[in-house]
Length: 218
Picture 1: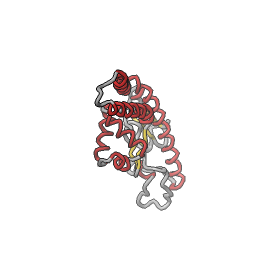
Picture 2: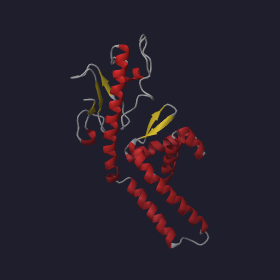
Picture 3: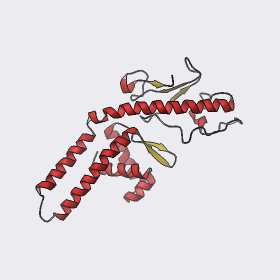
Picture 4: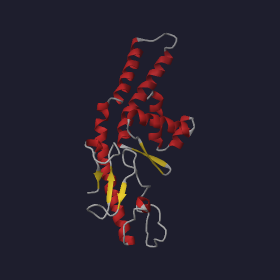
């Protein structure tokens, strides 16, 4: 992760999209996407949920933005100061500013910083599952049945063939991925209920504990 990654992240966050951010940054969209992927890889958490024509920040992105904005502002101030004094060499104050910025950057990626992000992601997953469950119930009220395993959650946003009573879309946007960037598992019938909605947590595998624990609709 470098400062340019953070600049691109802030631009995408504020523009709510890669296309607009690329125009503001004066670069192509593929460069912006690559920078965001690099940042997500370095931090180990997804930062944006890709949706039609826009992106939505995750809980981790909200936390990162507040700190990244401060770092970028401090860095811009340092750069302006250095340019003013370019011919005079570094002053002690300017060196201290650079040291502070480096310290802030190191603080971003410290594991303890992202310890709280995991809790927010679990809460986000539970909220998304609750919204999907309500959408599925409305689908059943309209059509008389829940979507089959073959149709899956896609039936909430796209009319299935030969389903005349479909009155969707039942979600305002596309079917979300879980906070760790993986699709929710939809299974009908469920082991105990009409259907199951499950996120396998951070590790994407059944079982586990903490952030790796399964999160379901019951």
